[in-house]
Image (tube, rainbow over all chains, first blue to last red; front, side):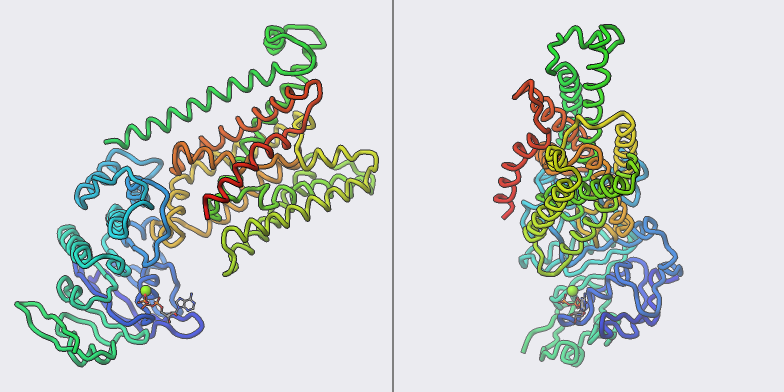
Length: 250
Length: 335
Ligand SMILES: Nc1ncnc2c1ncn2[C@@H]1O[C@H](COP(=O)(O)OP(=O)(O)OP(=O)(O)O)[C@@H](O)[C@H]1O
Ligand SMILES: [Mg+2]
């Protein structure tokens, strides 16, 4: 059974933002969500995590309609990192600890603290574990909120432009980290991203969104000169580099 | 890890506050204009001592201290909730006009009911104060959700509301009983001397139950500090948390003001001081803030009864003198 199944989802504010979105996502799959500003990427992710409610259509996780899933149960299955994050006045350690919330009964236990410390080591955050999160650089902060999402031990990770405020080195580092960690834990990932080459380097699948509708969905073969022109109004050259594709602006 | 030491420090600070509170309570029971010695008051507290000293300790000072204690808790709790739901360090019941709205509500209950020959009961006064408190709270939330309203705008609106409600209260008082202008002052600057055991019981029940409920949701409140969307994705029912917060903040402000008047700035000071010492983790900030609130009220009241003895100053005047500079400090720093 597919992990996520989206069935003819429509969403509107005052006009339709998402139109007839249907797709499936299998376990452990890494999907890049591509599209121009305003295409509806954030809106789609928010619908998947129930921050927004669709006008019609439904989302299923393991065959279960998400409308019937309780708040905590939902948070154990899907973690979401927003595109816009407010400054956090807590320490890095406490910020990651709050990611354990779906698993915390009355109070945090040794295993919760253990998990937080594991993630701090895994993501190389030891140096600022006790610093206030709002004193970190953009790249460091991005890793912290990523760690908070991973602390939920989700089956699905939704990341809304996690690399947009990072330098070129950290962009690749964060993507590699997500890729490796999620491969190891068999977490499915949907990441909205603007750097197509970065997406090509790390993703299994690509979901191209145009004006709120799915233009195409599939493996690297959906990234072509034609599709980039249609989705981004951009003229590019698509080259093969080893077993990966890269695109070059003309 | 250093985290454990941090937590130990936070715990230690809370124990320290407990000790401080016990100390100030004992001191407060001993301070007064009757010229009793410490030994006498302690003996009296344990049922010995003369008829007169028994009356002074049990009838006057103990209700004062107990009232101050629970009013401090209720006010600090409201302040903490309001600050974290508006994400605004300058917000509090008194700076947003919610306290004055409650005072107005209580006055309307007492005075209008007296017109038709009914002496308003404590519960009725409290109900009126709560109703006006929640109305004002919703008004402030409405203002703060406007697109153009930044943190300072919300506070300015609060200042205006505060003046408005205080003015109406004074006018009502003035017409009700022209000889008792002192009563109007007591509403705007709070006075612990008016509370009786029945009212203490109400304040105690409300503040203790509310605190317990808020403490139960400490993890959810921590999540709310990361923003509404993040809290939602962490499994928090954000709508419920918001409504619960508004309800409890308004309830505690309303009840406290109904029985002692406006004790300004305690709701601002208690959470601000506490979080500067032990941080924002609600597991520790909640008990810390409540104890701090009780301490601030008792400390101010002890001061109010000693600096101009045998005159007793209104406790709210002292808390305002302590609070206003801190308010300005935060205002300048948050820019
Ligand atoms: N609260 C809102 N009310 C009305 N329209 C909205 C609202 N939020 C977003 N929109 C509109 O919905 C459309 C899709 O927005 P969305 O944020 O999903 O785009 P996006 O693909 O994430 O863009 P970006 O790459 O800039 O993040 C945009 O046209 C936007 O203006
Ligand atoms: Mg977006």
